[in-house]
Image (cartoon, rainbow, N blue to C red; front, side, top):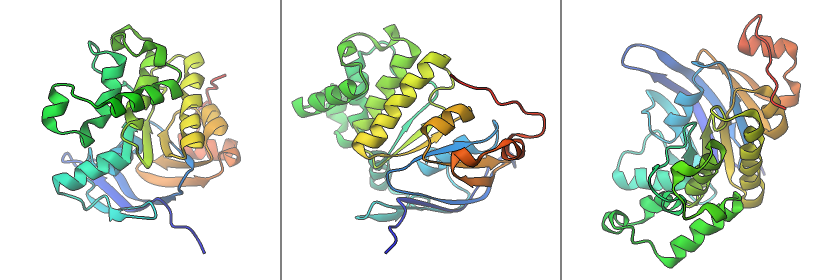
Length: 262
């Protein structure tokens, strides 16, 4: 008996108001517990696709069928505030530029991940429970930054801030964690630190990860499977180790050179 994928993307299309077709009928499955990496040139549709999955962007058409074994929902069709709130709890996201509140403490930033489960009044006054604080500290420890809990977020390095963003997303207790170019603004040495913690989240917590990346050297090291987009269409799906020179040229274009992150 085959296990249903945690997410089935079916003929996903996105056309922006200016007429640009960012996604032209993309279809693939995301398996529960995998570390799936999406690659492609800037403008290939990678970020648009993640933003459609978590409904920061409205899909033009297609289906995004989420199934965790208990609930089956088409994320492309949900509209009610309660459903969007449910989506935010089950599909976490981290961004290239961290999106932290600079003047707030690290712990306060992590607790912001609880907003979808906390009343507006309580969140406005920072009235989080002892259990919430303990959970936030647990995830800060998981990403190796618990000792920074009480300092301001803007006093951290870029890599440390991204680890805070990971901890914040984990407090939602998501089934899927989307990561949009999470190391693009970091130096090469820090890239591996952040990617190692994402892999730890994947392996120790069993959270399914869908991650956009630029560098194939990182993809080969961290991905359990890879899909490639080009011009809003799926052009590759499979084992990252099978992306040879010919495939690289097909995905990135003739004359493109691979950059390695050591």
